[in-house]
Image 1: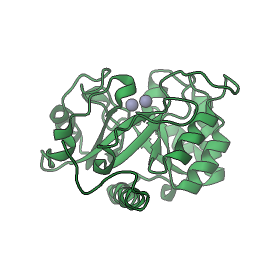
Image 2: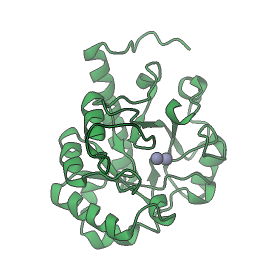
Image 3: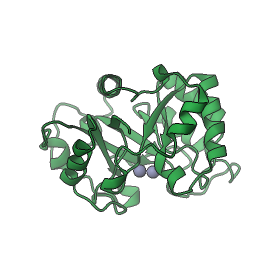
Length: 252
Ligand SMILES: [Zn+2]
Ligand SMILES: [Zn+2]
C-alpha cells in the first residue's frame, strides 16, 4: 500500500466517479497519510472548481489533502493546460501525455514534446505514466532531464493493472531510473475508491529493481510531504521571479 498517494481522480475528471470526500474517506480508511487529488486539466474536459483550491481546507481529520492537477501536454511546442489562475494554488503539478497532436518528428516517439514541455514549464513536479504504450518515450533521455530538474517519474499501478503497459517495459523503465538516479513516485492513478493506495501490480517490480528507498519520493509520509512542500516553494519562487503569474491578487 502506498502511504501517500500522489495521483487520483474524482468526478471532476470525466473519467472519475467519486467526490473529493469519498476519495479522502476511502484513503483514510485504508490508512494512507495523504492523498493528492489530481483531476485532469481542460484539454481532457476536466473541471477545476476554484473553491476546491481556494476554500476547501483539509476537510477530513486524519488524512492530508494535497491539491493538484494532472495536466496535459497539448502541442509539440510544449504547451500545457494549466490555467494561469490555478498555478499558484497548486500543491503538486503532474504532467502527462493523453492528447494526440501533430508533430514534425518521429510519430513513434513523444519524447521531444515532453522534454520541451518540462523545459518551458519548470514548475512541473511529476511526469505521469511514462511507460504508456500509446505515447512511447525515450526513457533514458526523459530520466536524465527529469533528474536535472528534480522531477519525479511515476511508477503507475493502474497502467500495469489494466495492461496499458507490460511488466517488461516497466522493468526496463526501472533499470534506467536506477542507473540515472532520477526520482520515482509510486502512484495508484486511482479512479475508484478501491484503487486508492494500490501498488500491488508494481511493488514486486520495484522491489526486484534494487532501487533504494531514498530515490522514491513517497517512500514515507515525511518524504512525500517534504517533496510536495519543497516543490511548491520552488514553484512559487519561480513564479514570483518570472512575474509570469500574479501570486498576490487572485480573483475567483
Ligand atoms: Zn494520466
Ligand atoms: Zn491520472
